[in-house]
Length: 97
Image (cartoon, rainbow, N blue to C red; front, side, top):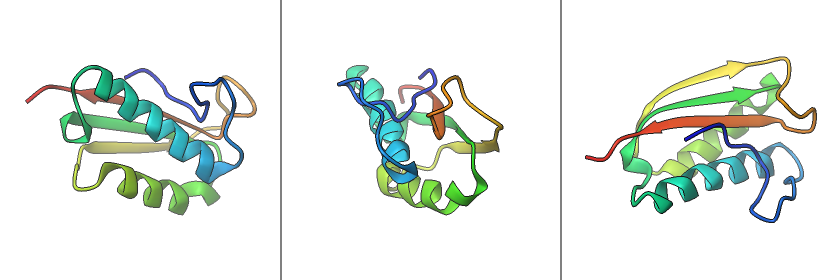
């Protein structure tokens, strides 16, 4: 799943860190669903955050969105993303069981 950001299907950027992180996860899960997959098919997730203060939010949202799925995970703090308005980007690798 290529990098997903906090932009919804309507093209609007979610407001604030928690909303952007939630939307990025919804986007990841939507891509999986379109492929007939779900969170338990995730093998590896990489999260990019631009602010260390968002780490607790990112962890809480990830846990809520993934439930009992436990893919390998890497989180990186970066100085910026492709748009200066984006606060998070999530990419993932999934495989069917």
